[in-house]
Image 1: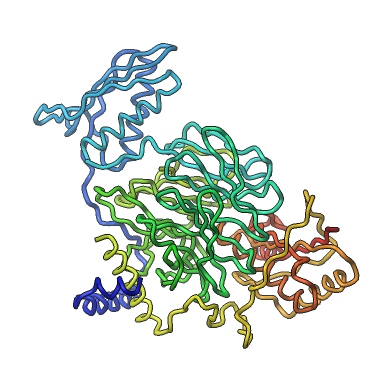
Image 2: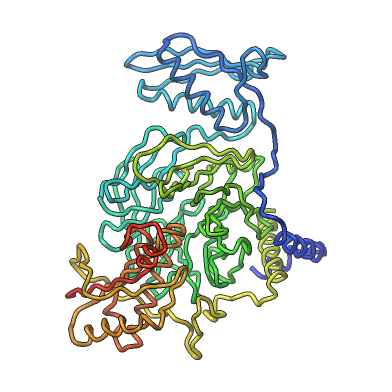
Length: 416
Length: 174
């Protein structure tokens, strides 16, 4: 790897290094303002005129569509008469299935920018509309939407912690485990079929994997000591995780079947909470090697560890965004920072080492997880010791609380 | 192109950190500047290089109360000198009786969940390492970190949190 470094750098390195050095120094003295990622495009006005056909179904379809468009961040819902884009459509259905037809037109030019029909079972109405919403985002904003995505999370129920999955908008909550134990730290496989997580159902903390389609469960890591923090690489072939079996919590990788175990770190400090770079070559993680927990990075094959964050003085739970190749968003790290005893969500742009706060208020805000669009993230907000899940659009800075879930919720992981 | 970007990013991060702290970067050789109040032991690669003992078989739950829990400072896995006598009591029992020991590591409710699992484990291993120094075979000792999932005191104040930052010791027959 050292050879590659030398070959790829020219004279610009010295200037880059100087600029970075100055930026880091200045950044440390900058006031802690709530930062917004630069707005790439403003919201465009969109008028929803509704759907003809079955009145009851039309109401549901309109509600789901409006919520999706609002949450996407690309649109401002506006009266039909003045909006830049206008929707019209019909929905028909019975017990055997539903059909949603939709046309979106640019009012000024009368140009039809979308004309599509969606079929589904009667129970799948929301899914059909989510597909429509994503198609609108793609057609009008040229970006990948999130309306069809799902979120896994930890649900505190009856003195236990179980895993659950729901639609990104908080609907269709489905409990995955019924172990009456502790099931935590879920992470999705890149194909969305499996979730790897930490389970105490055999008393000791193990890494298990559940197949969402078959319900089958597999034990991937049950070494002496701690087995936790498992996370799939972007190609799904490798899992990074935290094991303490050699005497200290350290970073390891194994293949997706739980074999080929390799140790990456060898420090006196504790390592935890790995997350993968988009190209699958680097793993960011937490270490208190410097005396306080900060985010570090290491090549997936091991080697020299590099510190990624220096400020604030406590940064944990990094999540590395993987925006699509054609996206306006760049890959960056979301973290949980602790400032003045309170927890904030921070974003660390690559090439800087400061986590800028994006959610900082009187609550504790923790455990960010990026959506696959690299623009939204989900996190846990705890106020007066009660926790709920919120979505954040890092471009607009807008937070949205998801529909309340009874009991405690935490450790959300956004699916592919 | 991606490799250049990534390589540059890593180099920038490295330079930025060096520029800011002026310290040598820590390599993964195990040698580290002291943190958490620990003193490096000369000649030793560092604490926590002894494998964790295998799990006791047939265990479904753990009974607490036989030993006093060892308590910890906030954000720390350091064994306070005032807690040593509790570890001596555990060691004395294990010398007099066969069987294994499970050490649970716990955190107070503050702090992020996964980091707390690692911190809880470091507390359990710190207690384990002290027992090894007192003459107990490491292979008799296994660890379970519960992070902040199993508080001793459900309160939300300093008094409760101080009780929750702890290790519990459970002697098991095998």
